[in-house]
Structure formats: C-alpha cells, structure tokens
Amino acid sequence: MMRDYLKKTELEKLVRDATLKSAKKGEALDPETLNPIRKRAPVVLTKDEQERRFLMVKAWSRVQMEKHKQEQVFLQGIMRSRQQALNELKRVSFPLYAKAVELKPDLFPFECQAPTATPPLSEYTPPDPE
Image (cartoon, rainbow, N blue to C red; front, side, top):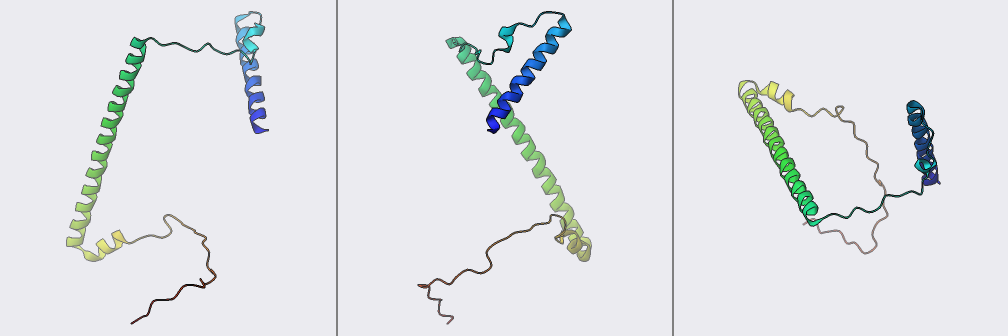
C-alpha cells in the first residue's frame, strides 16, 4: 500500500520535473521520457575498469582509516587533558573536584520500564546464607 503510494508520487514528480524542463527549453515533451518501465541496460565493465574501481575503493578505505585514526588520537588527547585537569583540581581543592565529577541525573533523563513482579520459579531453591 505504502510502496504503491511512493511509486505513484515518484512518478508524478518525474512527470512534473520533465514537464518543467521541457517548458523551460521550449521543447515538446517526449513521451518516452515519462515511461516508468524504461530501464537502463546493464553496464559491462572491462577488466581494467574493474581493477581501477577496486584500487579506488582500497584507496578510499585507506583514507577513511587514516581519518578515523586521527579522530581517535584527537579524542584521546582531549580525554588525557581532561583527566590531567581533574587530577590538578583534586590536588588543589577536593571539594571542587567532588563537585566537578558529581553525576547530574537531570542532564540525560532516562526512563526504563521493566517487569516489577515476576512469578516465582517452582524448581528454584535459594542458596543457604551460611
């Protein structure tokens, strides 16, 4: 149902865009342009093109890995600086340090619903407290 609606809206958008483009150019609208059944022929890649694309993907992977490493180093530096500042604050004034590391429960509100009453297990024997 939703898929049909999306296809319909997509087709309407294609028709609207094609109509606007042809109107801007002052050309007649080509009915073949609006054919939703029209498909592209599969692209056949040569061995050289496959190799080139493979190497390009590998190079992109290396670039992304380097970027990730740089981000990790940056974040580790921030964490190290933060820890050094907290250690210095602890050395100078412990009450200020305690206030700085105090958890603020209203900062990130969290609600969780879990079962509160579960039936006892018939075969369970509690451990002896001694």
